[in-house]
Length: 360
Picture 1 (cartoon, rainbow, N blue to C red):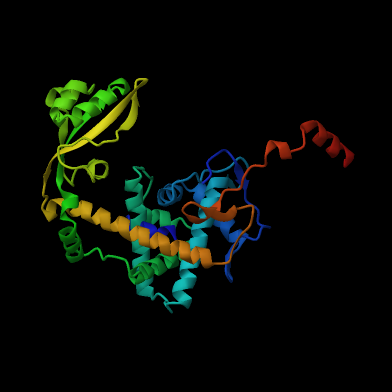
Picture 2: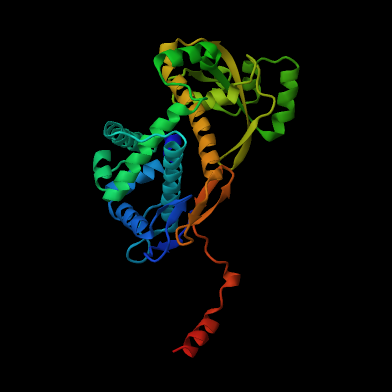
């Protein structure tokens, strides 16, 4: 189902190693399962083909590198792939049984193209440089894996159209959303003050007495922008920093520093960082379109994530312990990487040697 969320926005990390075993039972969701042999084939392909591994990692950033033994993969990769397969099965079951959807050959072709595009966009979003193309990555998948991924993509494409809270990403819908939230896309001129902790009280008293943003920055800031009254520039929706700047100043009145600063460290020194908006200028839709699109994608992704958790929470899921542990984290149901046993639960090497000698 992570692929469902990714359509809108075009666990454990360590040295634990997972050895693939064809005798394990694989995974199952309700009455549908993926055998251990199938998972072994898929994980081997991912770990051994650099192009496929790169594009899969872009879809779900984790380590799919080979493990210590032959035909093995890191536990994080095994768990992450098992999780994607669980989500895919949950999607397919829901759209087949509840929505009576069965993709046609044409819809499957569209899904294959969509999956390639999604992999390509995620590679760019994660600043990765993959050998080969997404088309080659898809072709490198074992046949059963490729069929399953394309089917899950087709089912996801259909399902996102059925979410009632989804906002279509058409130009008309984007313009309508922009019109209702135009102030959220103002070009923002920002000033900052980088204040030593020992001067925070005096800074607050100065602001309370009516000192302007520029005067406060000139008097108390340690930043080079103090010579310009703290001005660091104006940020339009097309700026790469716009989203983070907007989130920092969204609730601030004009020409007032935030009452509560953020504390940052630089070269071993701690500073109180104050931010203020000195000017807001309406931005035409054409200049704000990319940010409007990103905002709609984020809203739609939140809706998809809610649906994903509802589907997974209601499903009967079994994951062979060799592949991971099915559980609940802060973001919803998930497959966790197998945990290493605690050292206190492991017999000391001396006892182990004596025990093995007994059975020789």
